[in-house]
Amino acid sequence: MGGDKGASRAVIGAVATSTASVLPVFLTGALAVQISGELGFDPAGLGVVVALYFGVSAFTSLPIGWIVERVGPTTTSRIAVVGAAVLMLAIAFGARSYALLVTILLCSCWCNVMGQLSSNLTLARFVPANRLGLSFGFKQSCVPAATLLSGLAVPTLALTVGWRWAYVVGAGLALLALPFTPRSPEKYVRTRADPADRATGALAVIGVGAGLGAASAGALGVFLVASAVDQGVGPGLAGLVLTMGSVVGLALRLLHGWLADRREGGHITVVAASMALGAIGVGLLAVPGPVALIVGTILAFGLGWAWPGLLQFAVVRLNPSAPAAATSVVQVGTYAGAFLGPMVFGFVAAHGGFAQAWAVCAAMMVVAAVAMIVGRRMLVAHRDARLAMATVS
Image (cartoon, rainbow, N blue to C red; front, side, top):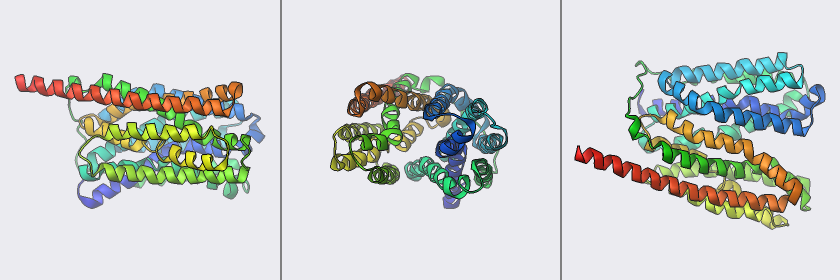
């Protein structure tokens, strides 16, 4: 598949697949009030579900990356989309208790992991190099897109015909992604690469940085409103600021991708700088008052949580022979951070207050930036060593 039409279709397919595969967990979060009223669990129970979801995702990332690399993006994208649809129907008709809801939702973890990694492989194989950065920016829009769809489900479905029908409609929307999954007239052939070419150690360090960054930034969507209200900001303004932060984050993700296509390299350095500046914004959230809240939110979302697409793009560019496997290593850290971050924040906030929790998050983001720099240096050293060996031989 080639040309502008093929590349555009690949981007649309990657966004559709990623959004469909992550929809079950975001729907559960958006519909938590209605679901808890029937199944009988509190916010702590919801927190446990989300934490377990990302924890299981971390464990499944590496093996699923191996599968995606060997089977190819077409089959794995379709499996992820159909799996997400089936499991949303299972929640709609089979989740008659909290335990069953948790069980079914955790079974959907592999759909999300497979959907994200197959989308990475789709973009790597079908999008020209000069547009790959922006394509990853669009692909990372799946999270706000899933959040938007989940939010719309509350007034249109959950409060009218019931929360179970929201999952039925979600399953239908997921299946609408099937026609956009990648197609190629040629049989998929996995690119063979020497395992020594993969800088696994460097990727692991970068994954640690991604995990710390995700742990810090992941607390934004969960605790920003509660923290602002605790500092005396009105709930309405706090909600509007969160919405503004989400829009800024989405716009900056696209801008990161657009600029990446116009640079020759240094993408991981840009990720590190984005994290370091984002740490300032996270730190400002510890300062009372609406001005610090607004400025901190813009910096935290716009820089501290706008780097995932750029990082995945950088990893794919550095590992063109095995993009799904390489990004799966980094995704382990991201999912682990999403698992641990809200729990750490909640513990610190409960014992030391929101200001102390935001300070801890800011420190984690600074350490994440340092880990990115260290990982990049390891990648450069590995590349130079491989070039030297090739020259000698």
